Length: 250
Image 1 (tube, helix red, strand yellow):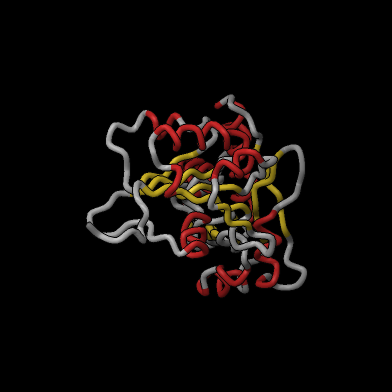
Image 2: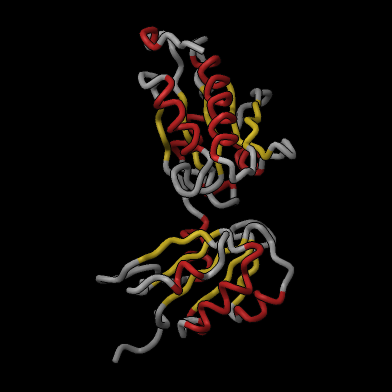
């Protein structure tokens, strides 16, 4: 499908907007202002359902009656399947932009941190590099979890390591130089494995789990052994400090 990228003066702008961790009040003011001006909302949904948590979170800030279009995102490990889906999704978005309509793509957290927006961004860059795309940064779940638990993430010359927990705790086991702070996102089904890994590394006592951070039913779990025993929930993360940030300095 060919797109005339020379008509950029007629094209609308795509805004990548992270709605934050879940509390509607944690959406950036800039994002709220932009949401009042766009003509359509896009969001990624699993091909198994059309539910969008990001749209629900942004709900109080959306103009009444604004159309919402779900872009199917296949939860597949087959790269060709994923690429094909995002090519089709990008064509859908471009179709609206070429009509001169502005659009926002909503995602939880930050649009460039473990986000489906990066797939759309990359695909559109290759298909129509002249289309204007503006990304608005969002508050991540781990930033909100640090705030909820008053946990300093890094200070002085400390380092921060951000890991996906999808494959368990191997990420921290394989890190030769352990970071002062490690954040496990997407803990979900590998929770017990991650907790075991933290125990092996001697970090269990200075780690904390947060479930559904910033939502009304948020849980903070200081004893990670109890977290490992619970039924896993998708919105679970672990903040792991190498040492207690509140310990008296030696």
